[in-house]
Length: 114
Length: 180
Image 1: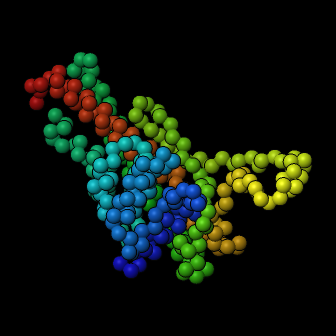
Image 2: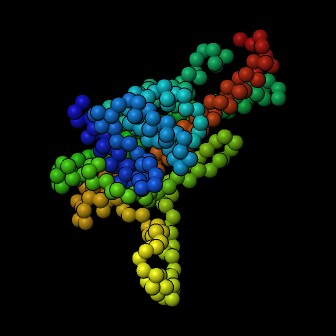
Image 3: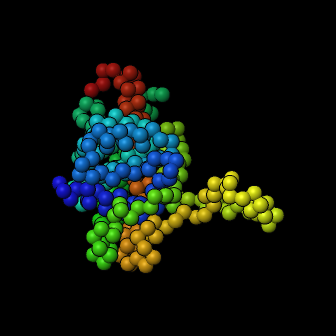
């Protein structure tokens, strides 16, 4: 648990190196580094803020962080911003947990195929 | 629309959906690989520069994105994403006369500098001479960004296809309520 902040920071640092970071004195940052003492409410509030910003098209979120706010992800039905779950170092990507794939998998029931 | 036509369209959409799911799985595997490569390169960079030399402590206090997302609507409700390099603003041209006037007025009302330069490369946050592993990490995550845009487009197409299929299934049930 103590190293969890470092693991998330690695993913955020990597994508910021890719050039997607935005931060200036007038606007809120377009990223959040989840530390070991970051509370779930803060994650959820930040996620909802990103959903409502008109300058964000895709939200990248580590899947085990997405699990903490799964209800907020499942409630998001709009095409923009798109939400993309990505693995973290200690938590491999699990397709069974992905909101998008769960919705798609739910189509292939006996009732739906009749 | 007659039931056979609806069934044909439904089959077509289902096949498209299955194809999209297969493509999504493939792109996800590549994205995960790129991200893992990026982590490994970052770890190598930390080994070379020091554990605390590559992390949030080095983030700039002012960041401008080097890449942006371009969205387009292929069909109604179907969004497609593409990563493009952020536009480079042309420098504001100030003639010699204007510059002299500004100097005469003094620094009291200095206009706020416009963002006229290209966005700074985030590699510069970590020093002038950065190890090759950090550049490799940047390349891996840049590849990952384009893949992320492709995956997001596919996810939207899957959601869109799912909604289309549900709509057609409802119509079909109305036309053939007794069908098994």
